Image (cartoon, rainbow, N blue to C red; front, top):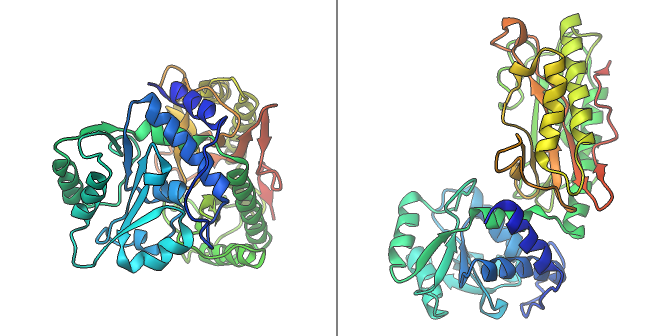
Amino acid sequence: MDLNGLLETVARSRAEPIALTGRNAPNLEFSLGEYALRYTAASGLMRELNLDALVLAQPNTIRYISGLQTWLWILPPLLPTAAIVTQDPGQAALVATVVERGGVAGTSWMQPCLYALDDDPIAAIVGAIAERGLDRGRLGLELGLGQRPNLSPHDHERLVASLTGAQIVDVALPIWAMRALKSGEEISRLREAVRLSEIGYMAALDALTPGVTEASLTRIAAQAMLAAGARPSVTPMTLIFLAGPERYRQVLQPASDRPINEGEQVWLDGGCSVDGYRADFIRSGVIGRLSDKAEHYYDIAVQALDASVEALGPGRKLGESWSAAQACFDDAGVGAFTLIPGQIGHSIGLDHWELPLVGKPGTEQGEVVARPGMVLCVEPTIVGMDGDDEWRSGIFTAEDQLLITDQGVEVLTKQIPRTLVRR
């Protein structure tokens, strides 16, 4: 089943939420009703795909379905956790180390199955599956696109090898579909993450003066976000701020102590998170003006973003947005210089990049039909014109985070203009 079919299953299933029989833990990030809605979608997908259970080991998907938060997930996977999601939520289980006893009790509604520090965690997961009579069932595991279970490759092999009587099915796309349609509670967290991040960006742009460093701007932004209500958590604050011709090619690297000069594009990307839900948008500033060519290319990128957002809406294929941006670039003679030719954006939630992507028509992602509840980040980007293979003239893009609604599109990132912010 393709993503459109899976998304239809999720939307149809959520129309009749089940009741959870789990504990209303004192530190749940969301209401018990919210987790019931998520479990309803998982159950509907399992029925559609004839699955007996999901065996989940990816941290953000465990957090999504169970509520568990733990900083163990930023460590090597020595003490893995797994969520066993059964058709009957009363049989669902969270397999974790005894070190997590208090964390499971405080942050998750699921029944715990705890293993000792000298136990084999894979044996504990397999044992919990067998206790529920699922060891010969049809089990969905995270095997495919974009999945990163918090197990070592060897432990993952042992898990699959230990389930010899079961039929193993990849559920990568079903999981992305389950997480793609955000609820009201999720959207409220995403709105707050954007609000806080815009405060941080504005503080950094207000501090833009000759000689200030990239790292100083990130500190100013982070301090402003924290002062406005952000808080440190197991989900890091991601701020990629950079400036200067030798830095634009380092588009995925953190800020440095490089001082910023007049006439340089100052590129701000990323944002903070609220209860794990992330902001991600791009704005640029400059002290004075960029070169005439750089100003021209930046204007083209903003026009492409305007067009791509206009082409989005419920019932429209995501590929229409890609085509609108590409038409702008082609008309300006820069269509061959897109940063990622096949896509111009991504979904966002607990992960910075989620599916569906805003892809080219005719691709699996581009054929996805937008639905209310999708939260997308759209960022058509051009680089390397005029033989500038090192991108020394700049990174020409602006990025918005937006919500697909029943009526159309709501742009969440609206406090800072898409155009260059001048100081």
